[in-house]
Length: 82
Image (cartoon, rainbow, N blue to C red; front, top):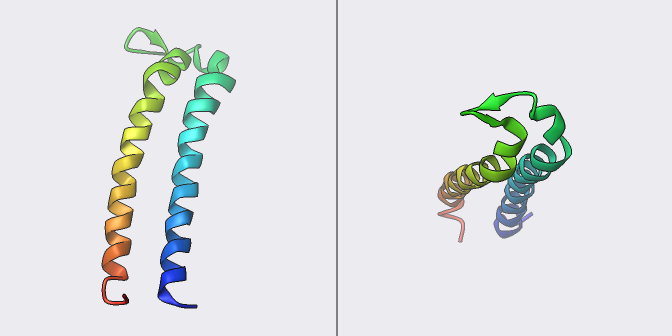
């Protein structure tokens, strides 16, 4: 397998994993598990409400930085294999 295919397969693997995490947090915690999470509070707000309104956004921003870190590492790995 050539380096280009390996690079893009790794990139797509990162995307699938990171977007799955975001989907789980935004849809799972913010919609499906909202009643269960609302039994707990964070900063005076019900946890399910917090995930629906703020948590998914925070997780998405964190995942952007994780993606940047992973891609920089992947680029360094394949830098000499153009």
